[in-house]
Amino acid sequence: MHIPDNYLSVSTCALLAAATVPVWVHSIKKVKRDFPRERLSALGVASAFSFLAMMFNIPLPGGTTGHAVGGVVLAVLLGPEAACLSLTIALLTQALLFGDGGVLAFGANAFNMAFILPFSGYFAFVFLRKLFAGFSKKTASSNVRSSDYVALAIASYLGLNLAAIAAAVEFGVQPLFFTDASGQALYCPYPLSAALPAMAIGHLTLFGAAEVIFSLAVYAFVHKTAPSFAVAEAAFAPMLSEDSGGEQKSKRGSRWGALYLALALLIAASPLGLLAEGTAWGEWGADEIAETTIDGQTLGYVPEAMESGFQWSAPIPDYSASGLPDWFAYILSAVAGVALSVIFFKLSAAFVGDGDGV
Image (cartoon, rainbow, N blue to C red; front, side):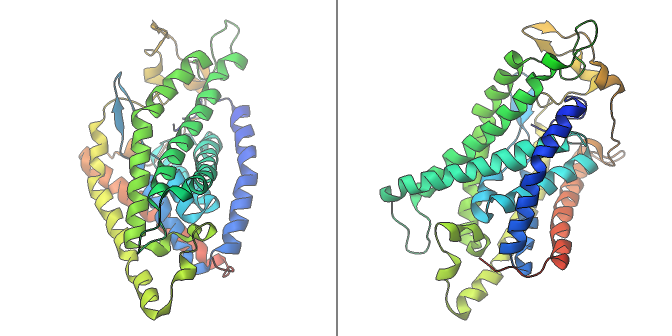
């Protein structure tokens, strides 16, 4: 779902970036107002979890790959605005440092994965949680109902697929509006009739299932080990307000270590993402796209923009480094991505005054 540069026209990229700017502005204002300075580190941890989730590629029959994003569970735990900012930093790190997703297309990728995915999934979860509330009871030690997991599963699946559909539409309209004198596509050559089913097949099946599994695992893990991380739960299950006494505050502080341990384990396991061979649909390089097929026909040409368009030289392209084994470079990339996510929000706290709290 990471759209590379030169698949979308410059005007399309500019339009989607402009549409995302108000979302970023709203999200920044919301987080500044509602998050105390010391809570901003939660956004860094959230960004790191999403960054790592996207490193675990899953193969799809036919030679393409995909991955989970984790945007909906982050929105449920922290709020959609906080999730938006966390995902934005993860996507920016991927584009600038690893060449995963385009630099010019950054606004488009943020529109899909940092706006559509977390916001649509969050509001679906809130609606479903209320709808299912009467069908199950809270456990003795948590405000989480069993039906909350059902709501989250549906919402995360919905959010991922809406983002994938948005990307497919962005791909599919390019050959309608941008062609050369001979009628060949200047940018993405795949029409809606090809892009929509291609994106839908993976995300409605394996990638959607991976998103659900990852979301449920994170949600359960957080509520078991670090419930204070779930600051957005106050909107519909006032977790933090029900804490009482110094003992509970001590637990909230000490249990954050479990989140960092989970990040470390995911980093160590990240080379599993290398087992999936192939390229995600719509992310082929100029050297690959001429050999791809549309309706059984080989494309046979490289769109002009992919040959002569904008090129960004990422310092660590495709999470690999010359002279290092792929698995080791992948782990180093995971460490770098996690570190940058956490450090960014740690530094941001220095410029943000204390909010009103949650």
